[in-house]
Length: 428
Ligand code: EPZ
Image 1 (cartoon, rainbow, N blue to C red):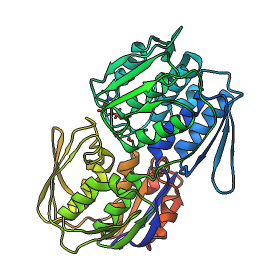
Image 2 (image 1 turned 180 degrees about the vertical axis):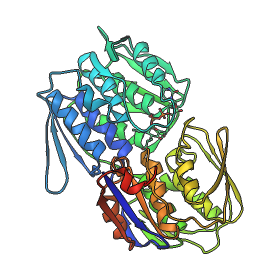
Image 3 (image 1 turned 90 degrees about the vertical axis):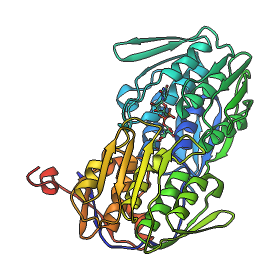
Image 4 (image 1 turned 30 degrees about the horizontal axis):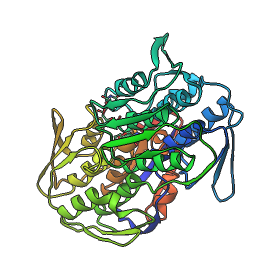
């Protein structure tokens, strides 16, 4: 198994370019199935979630190639199957986007329930609500969902829960439906806007993304398209928080500052210096940070995907901070591991009470999800001693070559192979 060895008491310094947004890319690749033509997608992050999605596309009959500059060319003319391979599907949550895409293309899809990070219950009832509103039937047979529709007819859909996945999936299924679809109480994440821009580049007619009412005028068919994926605001935010938590100084480049407003505001509140330019942000950590309360909410609120990294920063701030996780029920699995490193955190319902100002000390820890893993890297950099972090495969799902990119920010971090867990967690 692979681990990261992270030397403590290091300050992040330097500059780094942000990659393309994972949560836009993982929707755009399945969305390409809506055309029988060819799409060119640039600025895709080189992460394992993308590798898995490419394997699924190829299993369905798509031809995928990548140019030296990293541009992905996908030829969808040979796609004949609407049953993605189960073993691949349950490796990542984003495989649920094949539901909307294959339903939109074939009016039929057979797919197992999606996998992905364990953040507590992750139902897909709102996705199904949208598909049935468009005229599809949904049956579950031996763990495989069979979704079929003679015809897809535009509908007026009110989401009971603000859901990124359901909003995107309904957009995909509605793009070539007959008539107009309205999604109310839609999620407003920038990644959803990016997916809609890709759909419209293929000839779809989607308006209103970025607001809570999205309108889709169904069209007969979609064609070829070229698209450049937007920068990853969560990766950018991770580097910003890591810089502040290690009291370093860094410039994060090729970002869209607007997308980072909630993180910039919170970092300034704890006493971090933040300066923004047209496509960059400069962060300078302060020796003394003060506590702050954080509440996660759908965009434009503070993103749940940065809750764990922010928790680490708040362990370094003087005073008591409260984090309230309003998006996912079970998104505090990183707390126990942080407590092993000396963090003083108490859980109460959806809130975590952090008593800051205590130095973290290295300990063998294991990532159980993508963003928790990123938080442990930050904790390792800020703590005394050398931290051994297992579960690197979770981090590789969403952060490209994480140790290489952190080394470019001046920190010592190595990826090593360990024979088995006993080497890391002796006496576990
Ligand atoms: C997307 O997950 C992202 N994943 C998550 O990022 C992100 O944390 C989340 O949106 C919120 O921003 C991808 O885009 C691949 P939701 P998703 O549907 O679509 C409930 C990362 O680390 N809900 O917006 O699964 C759900 O239980 C990942 O990059 C229903 O009740 O999130 C949750 O409480 C982690 N019924 C809330 O809505 C449904 O049908 C928000 O979930 C769907 C969701």
